[in-house]
Each structure stands twice: as structure tokens, then as C-alpha cells.
Image 1: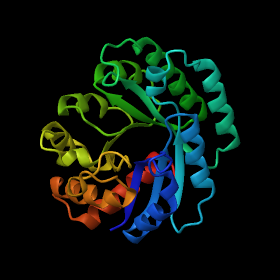
Image 2: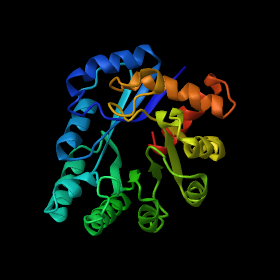
Image 3: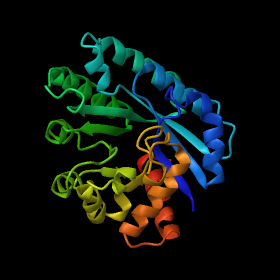
Image 4: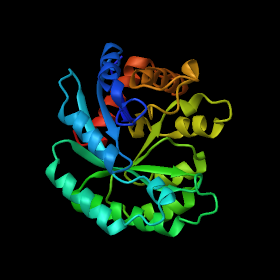
Length: 264
């Protein structure tokens, strides 16, 4: 089975030192391509460096941006200064950067919404940057569908990738009319994730992408262990079963979807 991990974090401190061995393991399991996703400037740079230093027999790209967590952790985060730094860095590394992300709104980590206004400001700024650069966007949205979509629906020209879908089929129906791809991972197997499974059932095949979010969200057979890109094979198998497709047919479509979103 041909595998693509559209959203992983080999640039994360938990697994950065093991990146090469994890890539080798991914290749052995059928891996053909992966995208490391940035969340702050340190991990943005690591994502690009992994792509830049790639000597493996697979393709590695980066998506970089500022996760809403940077605002939650640091209320004094200077949006203008950091966006300029991000823009300058992209200009020097365009060969390796294929999307802006992960960006969005998070009201799970900030349940009181104290940082919401500044999260929204950062989100707008990065969406505008993606427009200028003609790049797709990787969206992080947790416990904040309405707040995220209120902003995102104003950027109809962007390619939108909803990372780690956890919302309802009704909410999904709102976004599918746009240029949107939906990313599924091993939340599909969690006992209480019926909405996610039902969402996958109604998502058009050409709008589906597979991800691990490694080192987070390990699949059910590996719960309690650090997640890694090769575990995306379990997500492929589960999703193919839900969509009533054989794994080979499903994996070919996912490869096409991956290349279409990232304009490869």
C-alpha cells in the first residue's frame, strides 16, 4: 500500500532526534511522502531543515506557521514582528514550504476565551499571507468550529485543509462547498468518535487526506505509545473499511488528493 502522511511532526522535540529512523520505518511500510507541520518558529525551522536535508527515497515537505497556542502561552506575542519573521523565512526557503499551518482557533486550551480576539487577529494575518503567497492552509480548530469558520469562509480562494476533523457531519456540510480537504487520523477508532466516523462516510473520496499528527494521537492498536508516520497505515485501513473500498484503490485516491492539495 502506498502511504502519504499529510500532517506529521518529526520536528517535535519528542521525536526530532529519531527523525531519520522514523523516516526509514515509514519507507519500509510503503511511505512515499510526508509533510512536517510547524507550530512556532523553532519547529518551523526544523520542519524546513528536515526537508532540506532529505536524502531518503521519498518526498518530504514542510508547512509552517503559528499555532494558536503561541498566543495562549504568551499573551504578549508580537503578531506583526513574528509574521514578518515568518514571511522573510518563507522567502528564503520557498522550495521546501508547500502550505501555511497549522493555524486557526483553539478554545479547548483556552476554555474561557481570554485570548480569542488575539487568536483571531493572528489567524487573519496568516490567511492573508497564504493568499499573497498562493499557498494552501492547514487548519487547527478545536472546540471552536463556529469561530474558525466565521473567519475562514471569507477566504474562498484558498485551499483549505481541516486537520484532525472532530466536528459533526452537519458542520462538515458547511465546509464541503468550499475548496476544502478533510484530514482524518486515528480519532476515527476512538469509542466516542461516532461523529468523526459519520463525517468520513459523507466526505467525498476526492476530499479525504490521511494523517498521523505524530507524535500525538496514536492509533488504537498502539495506544500508549508515541505515534509515528508508519502508523498511518492503520488509518488507511480503517478509513478504507468505513468507505467500503479496498486498500489499494483507497491509497491511490489518497495519493492523488495529497498531490492536489499540496500542488505537487
